[in-house]
Image 1 (cartoon, helix red, strand yellow):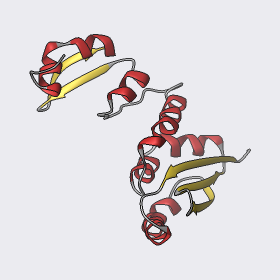
Image 2 (cartoon, rainbow, N blue to C red):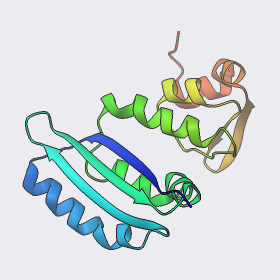
Image 3 (cartoon, rainbow, N blue to C red):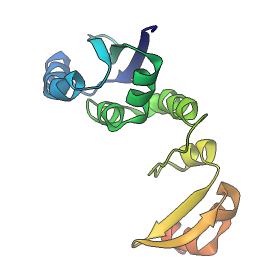
Image 4 (cartoon, rainbow, N blue to C red):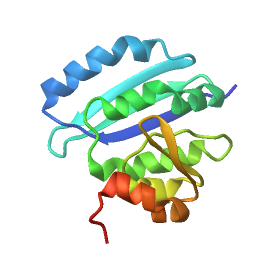
Length: 151
């Protein structure tokens, strides 16, 4: 069985002390990831970019990690910036090649780029469903999410 490495880069909010505290808080969850052999975190204090490297015992274990809640927590935890959206979108696109992905997303550029089918909810009820073009033109969606003064 061949080991597989996953590297995640992200923008870090705060200084090295804050980053270390966040990573230390996440350590128990990281240590319990199935198939994880070793991991490392680093921060470039000049650029504010963090890097996490994970070594998994197999490709299957790496795929499980990429599709699971731990990665989402890490990307949302220490401070992901808008400049990281492209990287995360590429990870999601890779995961979605051979499985369905359910997203809750409010960044419409990301939705338009990644989603084949969209369901818009309002107060827990389906307001509209379909492809991005159809849903984005739906008057009920425009009124609910953009107000009545839209162009």
